[in-house]
Length: 459
Image 1 (tube, rainbow, N blue to C red):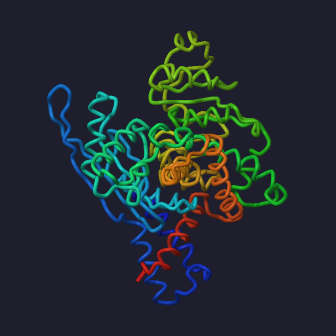
Image 2 (image 1 turned 30 degrees about the vertical axis):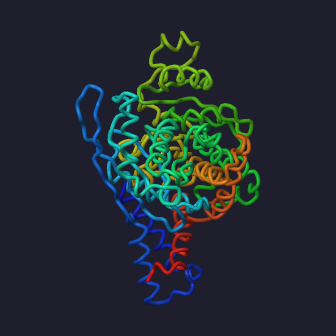
């Protein structure tokens, strides 16, 4: 995954090298030197912060928990990115995710840089008191590099509003008298969080899909129907007809995206399959998404795992193995779980022609190339799952102004922001030979490179 981001950054710069409108003041040797500088700057983080948190468990033992905070780039503003609590998180993964945050913020014109944090634990194995201590220790160990104008963490896999509340409170204790509301985003509303933050990523993921497959094609139908672009052909093959959707992951992102699809009046779509860490549920006629969400709220987010439980809750579905979801015959596949889910081992069995990345980097480099070559339209993470950081930006601004928007106002602003990005990217994408991921990266790299040059950072 690390190599993938670096490769795409370098290939994006290579695509721009012959474009005279890109950094037009640079010529000949100075231009070559600037491009080498850009590859180096954008492919490596500014800082890698590591520590082992000393945690006293309730049973009396003391453990040392590995923790990271990678700060990639702050050209456009303070570092910004989530903190992940997961047993498989590692430095390379966190570093790659920090790069993705830099590019994502540049793509969506959000005035933040990119960062990411990780703690190597399975949060299910710790008590609430122990998790509270881990959160406090994380802030204590990294307090010098965090702050409203320095580095602003948010929730990620394994964390949520509760953890951000704990961390903000510890930051406030360590820095008395300093502004603290903007030190963390994704907090609870009572602690200065924004309405709509929890559902923002999932809503943004589905909005991206709906806007592209309905609004954009409807408006641009005259030229798209005659286009020989392979991705435009894929989009047109699925326009204005019933669409079946499978969603991997039924957490904050997947369940919200599923509900948006279930309630959508613009597209004729139905969610026929969903999965979580235990199981896949399938119904060719469409699943009862509200009933599954209701069940999950009472069972720690898990889906029903057997026929008896399904019958008890009057949910019609067939129980399949967890990984079966990826290979079900559907029109659209939403990936809202973890990294590297579609890879060389299963890419040839993927039947969906539309893939939407709700998670970060769920498709490996080889699988991305293989599927794109076959005309599969992949909506990348950098474009689709930016709802969280966009609303985090709104939360950060609300904390500074101490004026708070309603939930409807937040979603309206979110959709407007994402539509601006889509209207910028999609017209060029459906005319270019590049996959959508490459198109987005080129746009982000152009923005970052231009600002770095204007700031005198390339020489």
